[in-house]
Image (tube, rainbow, N blue to C red; front, side):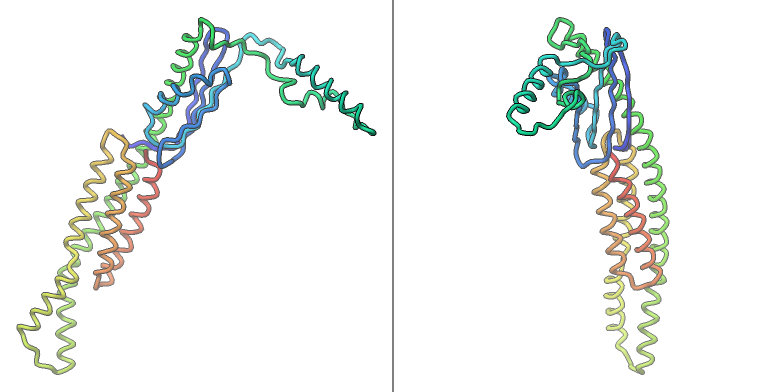
Length: 295
């Protein structure tokens, strides 16, 4: 299944008197890069949560945020750290006594001191007897968010796969054009050579002339490159249908396709074949840009 690496998922749930929200955002990345933002009391579970995500996702930069709040908080939304408040006031008074012209400060200045004012305690204790139940609830909610993230990735992945398959078909059409041009290119090369000899009024050795024509035909023959292009396109379509992460394999196949298209252009002795080579490289580049976002 082709999956995009760009997605967003949100899962909300409850455990006891607390409500939890998992928010997951992912974008393309060469490897799997997980960044978790957790409440301080959940930090001890970070390693397990990372492993849980790595079991589902293989590539992408993923930002995961867990938020929790107490359902019984009532109207009180903040609390004062009385001990810290007392220390800040004592320190401010001591500094003021040593200054010749102490600067005035207000209560708001004190409240801005880090830690003096904070959110109301959510009552969660990951060290008590309910810690295991709380951990299972958080992990279950994470599984739900991951499942939604995968659904979004797969939906966008199907759209990317459809765009890539469409361009594969366009590449096949260009390959057919180049193949059909081969006999005309070789005949045109022979006609130009004979016309040039006629202009020079030279009696050419027929045997030697045929040898030169065979040499030129071999030098300009692109049948092998066109066959390899077709084989690579078959492989691209096979990989798109595989039930595994396919982004890196597809990226490698784009390099192979581009190599054959470049060789086709370098061997070209015909304007139409050159145009075909340019069109192929444009299509391959468009595919490569889309594949950068595939897991």
